[in-house]
Length: 224
Image (cartoon, rainbow, N blue to C red):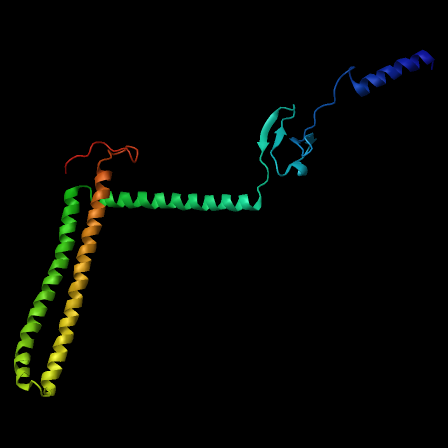
């Protein structure tokens, strides 16, 4: 083979191997990350850069353009603070859901003020009737006590007969029990009244919101 033919063949082989003059290598199919190191110099690697774990990194597209910011790794204190915030936010979301469900149930039970007033009257009347029965029982006990006290006057300065003493002791205990029951009923009456007052205050706001309107945007309250 002549020297001329050998030189031509070499050129052809070189052309296939390296392509057109000045052509760049094809971009890598992998990801590329970059950051500024502690020495102020730019670092570029094909995987997240360990040296830049405490600072933000840039992930690039294949053409070198920025794709996204890879946030720095959290410190233990930051992670704990973030998790604490997330727990608080989750608890607040649950609380809002609970309150919304309670509001729906309240509206379903009392669609109008008249319905709420009727329920209040019924429950409070039940308690008042119980208190009336207690008062009647106390009057009866006091009536039973009077003849025992009259008899006890004959024994001033002397020991009371066992029958009189046991009768008075039993009457005292019964009166004390009825008085305790009445105090409980009075407290129950106050608790129920407050509960209905609180419900009514909440219901007035809920009634003022037109159906389908965003919660919290109430129209002018109407008289019910």
